[in-house]
Structure formats: C-alpha cells, structure tokens
Length: 145
Image (cartoon, rainbow, N blue to C red; front, side, top):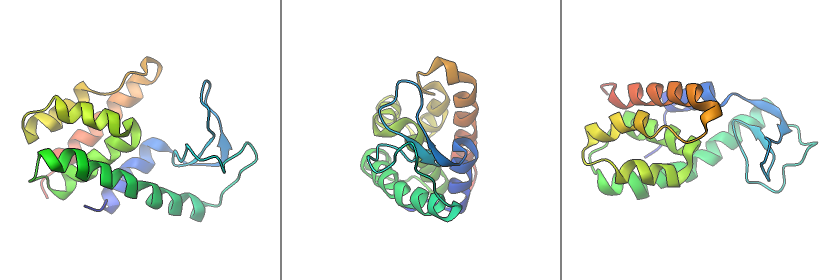
C-alpha cells in the first residue's frame, strides 16, 4: 500500500516542517524536516531546502508503509486506502511498536479505527495535540473511499 496525498497532507499538518535541525530535550538524535530523525548524518548545523524535506518525508514513509503492511494488513486483510493512510500517519508518529499495540488490542477493523484515539500515546505534555491528531487519523480511517 502506498500513501496518498491526503495521508501525506495529514502527516505534514501535524508534524510541521523545520528546515533547520533541532534536538528535543532528552533525545539522542537531531530532527529535521517533517520529523526525520534517527539519522547520524543530521547535526546541529544541518539545514535542508523544502525540496529535501519533502523528498525525505516520502523516503521515510516507505518504511512506515511496510510496517502497516506487516503489522496491520497482516491481521486485517481488507483495509482500504484511507484506513492504511491513517495507520501510516499513526505509525509515523508512534512507531511500529505503537502500531503493534493498536492492532493487538483491536479485534475488528471498526474497533481498530476507534482504538486510534484510545491508544493515543503516552507523552502527557503533548496529550492535547496527540489526541487531536488521533481524531484526525480516525476521521480519515472512517472516510468512505
């Protein structure tokens, strides 16, 4: 499954874009673009163009597309494109472990969509924003294709 423009727009909306690298408190790696991290090539002085940020987002998303296929589509074979896109946004933010937790606690596709808000994450200082994101992801999940 590939992410579509609506899925990309959702991720961009919530991730925001920083063309200058930054490091969050307590993090080992610098972040740049739309949440690109875990990359030793990114340093405090790294600066990207908008084109680099967009290209790296698309490259990064391939890994999350694979995670959705391996974790969610493996259990729920009939997921449509909006559902997969919503799950890619979820996984991009929470990682494959978060997606695995969501899938393990869901018995039906409908429950999977509703549980996106239940399993919003654990970062209390970002709770409001994360719950808002999970509601947007769930909205895309339930949007008729």
